[in-house]
Length: 208
Ligand code: ADP
Image (cartoon, rainbow, N blue to C red):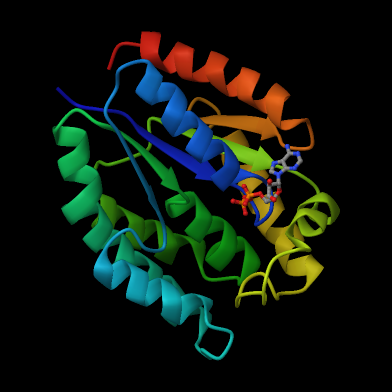
């Protein structure tokens, strides 16, 4: 039996983590085994890479950043995601390769073909079964982040950077419209939960 792989994407402050936790509880209530994880991270070495990537003091080239993200992803897929799916669990992941295409590709301008080649190498045939893109304007997302502690290396980027990331995500959603569901994240948390419940029910009913 193989579980399903669901990714949660969007700019910081869009609401991914809030709804990922809720989806975990909802799927658990349906009697499913659920694993939640995140990128970059999800493994000891991945979390160490995450700390390096988010540290505002880490100066590095955009390509170095992309390679680090994919190194963390390889470890994550091999030791966490694949084994969980093979055990029949549903894996909910806060960011995955679409984030690399959006942040390192759209945001930083790393060559897309290089990112796609790395994705091919690191993921093989693994693709998310569904990707929820939490979409909100930069202004709304930043207002929600206002109470957070010190901004990390990505959060402290200029609004234009986040605008490019948001647009790259929307372009990916158009390109992969069967896999993506765009969630209008400016709506209330309750309304979003209702939409997510409907979309998770659809996925539950779809044959593997
Ligand atoms: P992300 O994981 O995408 O960075 P979070 O889930 O941490 O975003 O949400 C950022 C903040 O915005 C949190 O304080 C959360 O409670 C709040 N939030 C999330 N979704 C909504 C929403 N639909 N309406 C109002 N506030 C929200």
